[in-house]
Amino acid sequence: MHSYRWLLILFAAPAFAHPQQDGREAIALNQRGLAAEDRHDYAEAEKYYRQSAAIFRALGPQFEPHLSIESYNLAESMCWQGKWREAEGIFEDSLALSRRTLGPKHIRTAADLNALGNVSMMLGDTARAETLLAEALAIERENYPADLQLGKTLAGLSAIRRRAGKPDEALPLAEEALNVTLKAEGREGTESAMMYRNVAQIHSAAGRTDRALPLYRKARAIMERLGETADPRYAALLSQEGLALMDDGKLGLAESDMKRAIDLLSRSPVAELELAVAQNNLGLLRMRQKKYAEADELLTKALSVEQLYNSQDAAQISRMRSALAQVRSALR
Image (cartoon, rainbow, N blue to C red; front, side):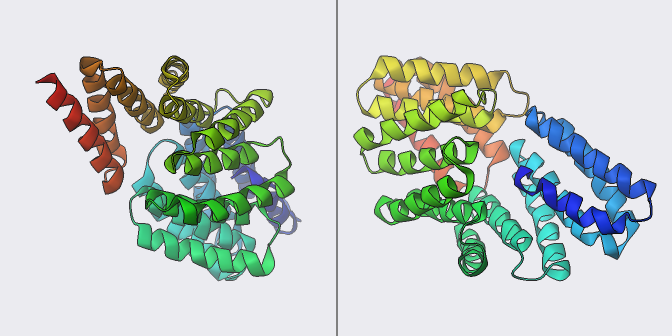
């Protein structure tokens, strides 16, 4: 994860007081992986992280802190490709290494708990996700109250509440996550943009499109100023803004956002899951427009990908099946 790039260098300094070519090669591979992530080439990043992790593993126990970071980076690159189940196991390895080598209250341990909790949520294991995030939250409240990780944990907990249909419980967590992130990163960072989006999603879920839309626009403007329009999260943001516009009755603007999101995601070789969500959203708009044949095609494509990549998220799959059933009923 980019916010922990400095940790790998810090751990490396004493270990390489006497040059060790293998270790230097591992760090060079890590840097290549980070550069590939900056280009949103997550498959290439995964390749470099795997090579780096293999070297650190072979170097022995004294390099386990490095291996923990590399495992984290590897798992994160796999999440971007929709490989949630495989990433879950690698995050578990990273967490075990961090607990053993750095201690139960280290920021790296909190980051691993946070990441694993969010993957568990994506896989539909809400109970495990909440347990992991609660443990991370306790560590961060006590030791890292100004760190970005606290914002991420709070955002994860708010997402659990939102998915459970409890927007009023989700909102205070999301607003605190936004405030923590703005203080830690500033107002012009990608994480800050994602936190504005998170609050907007909760207002959308509660039917408050008048409050959601300005937040979506703020998040979008930040991403555009940063030049992050190739980031799959930008396209996902456009699609979510489109849903809010649809709920607000602005169907033309909604269609423009949703079609642009699909166009952007179609260019990415590793954004199949995000593309499926965007297709689902456009399918819902086509339902609203009574264009049932097109809605059927979009929702069918989206459901097939969701079942392939995210088969454990029963709630999301159930919603998609319900929408598809309504479309097919209208087509009869």
